[in-house]
Image (cartoon, rainbow, N blue to C red; front, side):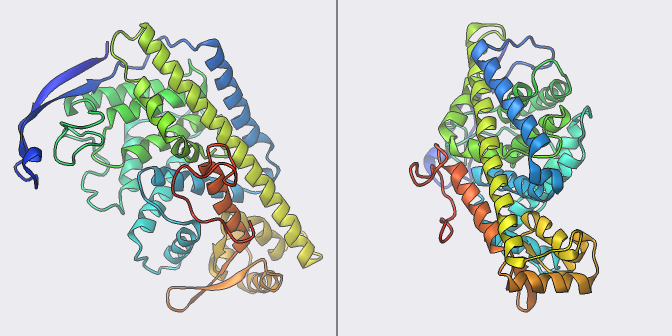
Length: 425
């Protein structure tokens, strides 16, 4: 049975105000273990889960552009990583982020701390997903490595890759848990709960979407790290979907939807933090509420990813019309297909990306620039790079679309901060 640990905060003498220095009583929540539990899905929730799994499976199997290249897959992974960061307040626009990414690839040190943190999130997500294939185990060491890489560029990342040894809390004061919205389990419970969570993630008894939903909620309830819990927990969603073979290539940008449905997201997480027996009515209703909402977020993420994929297809057709005849498998042909995943590039990065010589790539870039597919920009003080403005604008439009509760910012304003609408979009 889940339980509440009542404790006394003895005070923080370093708090800058009197109330923050005073002692208080607080309650920390310890969830039930997940591994081996019998979890029953209500009929409507089971239908929502089945719909979500069918949508994710179809996106992975049938998206034309993605069958042709992994470029769009990389861009959707970037979208998911950026969204996961934004939920925690790391705001950075697509163009600024992509230019910072290009600067890092060129060995030009970036000075934008926020962009560096988000790039760390992207790198951590990519590395984590590469470490898990269908049927592979999700281990605590894997999650610790993910967190360590995630926090490598974060200020104050001293606890990166290690389970917390102190009590933490969510919202309220920075100095004590007295007014916190939620207090996770005391540190002595964390190791057992994380071991149980990994065991749950490696079982196959539940549908993959329901399993990912509950794994994420349990992780956020445990809050096993001093910082970076949200981003790690949202990465866990993708690890579970990848392990179950549902999202074998394409990452649906679920975090973008969860960020948009912030109130429903938090209410859903709170519903899993029930009081009473694990097989009781409150527990059953709470888990089903959250799983249903999570499944809905998956469907919405796939729908918007599919519309973005269609826009990228249209864009490539428009580019080829401008260029005229393009020889199959030429540097120009390969670069056109690679641009969605690398909208900001240099001659060197393009040559590495498509496996062609520098002269061939330089000729292709010149041809694409002449057709207004690419535009020359400067990275740092004097480093020449090229930008596919239309791809970045489409990426920005995707983020704006996913920020709208109804999927259209013209009729349903964004529910969270987003980059301005691209010109003529």
